[in-house]
Length: 198
Image (cartoon, rainbow, N blue to C red):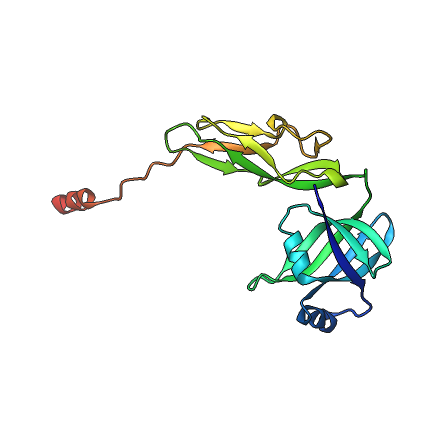
């Protein structure tokens, strides 16, 4: 996984008013924490951060005030529910070679068996443990030819080297369901019978 370099500044102003001012300048307030160190309050460039967060579990190389370089992964991202802009981000400090637990998106490929089956994503993301600098962007699972009743468990998914499951092996990730037959609407026959009885 590639690193995304982002320049950040430490911030000393806190509270809603300060956060609003930061966002007005197209920046995002954030907190960097981890490794037992005190949380570090940061201001990050909004556009650069938005682009970086398009990649799940992106590894961010932070240049803080032009003095310190730290590696981090996004842990919590708050967005405006209506406009979608970034309101706040929590970043987890990581070191090269360190293992971290993250959720990796699950992508299904292939066609289900003919018959109008439905594929249910029980887990949209698979919890895994991986080295901070080698977090997989996603895992891909083949559903080719599967029929109703078939399930893909966590242990059935091939993980990249150095990545291990952080969930029960028997956890259902995907399952195939039979399409529900549409019930015939209650129609005129019933009404006709009622009239005949009267």
